[in-house]
Length: 107
Image 1 (tube, rainbow, N blue to C red):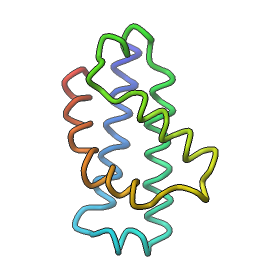
Image 2: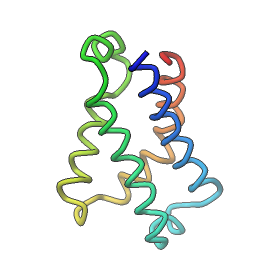
Image 3: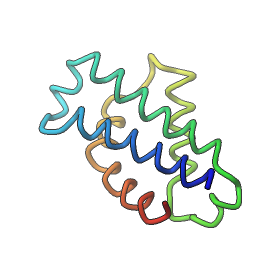
Image 4: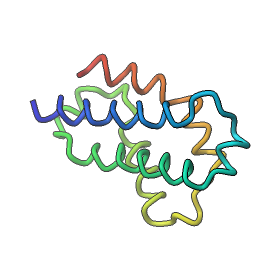
């Protein structure tokens, strides 16, 4: 039950990011500091929530990029000024939809 609640929260963060970025391109994203900060915060929350999942749950769902989510969170938290916005945008525009599908499948 605990893991399912965490996955539900993760899907909520993905939905927030998706709604914030709906219909915009990279240049609009890059120029809007509030949008960048909101998205980066929500991405960091995804990685933080990975740390709350049971190890057995993580190992039982190896197709989900748990380590990459944790790694992004660590990069954001420990080096905010160095966050690569192009990489963040690639994650938002190219990876989050698939991640949501993966998380919904194990929810």
